[in-house]
Length: 175
Image 1 (spheres, rainbow, N blue to C red):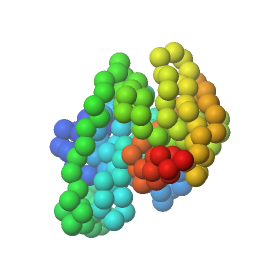
Image 2: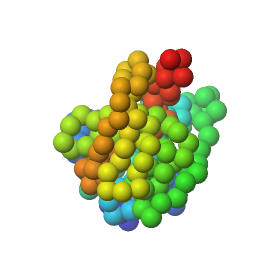
Image 3: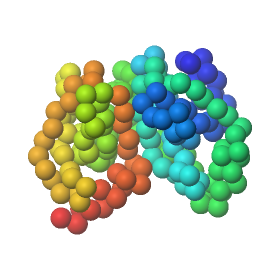
Image 4: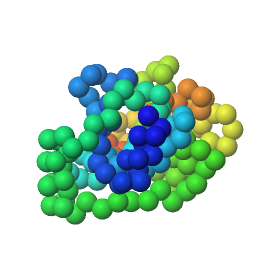
């Protein structure tokens, strides 16, 4: 799959990526932003053609990649209507996971982090310099609910800047 991710990134084309931690009919549409042997970052497009943040997922979880589908062709028509434009991750790390964590921490973004052990947490990354990630947790109403710690090796999904995280950021600022 690495060679395919490389090709799709270089061509900057939309794709549907299916993963083993979703159902067989669930996929995410977007542009491959970055990848390595362990993780890839997808710049996501919502079902109505809007920019929908970044997702960082485990590369080994990819079960299928599709291009030129009816869904993608419809999104290509919708994206200009919503003035879709690419955004950059203004951070660098030694690998894809580190880059994502640094972007979230540097820009004080609320994110969703999931591990294979549980359903995950939402909040702001306050430290990712060691083997564990410290997260200032927020609940569904944007209220602070303490600090959580996750082992980096257990992380299999991170989402940032999607509609869900933006909603939590807005709510957290209203507290």
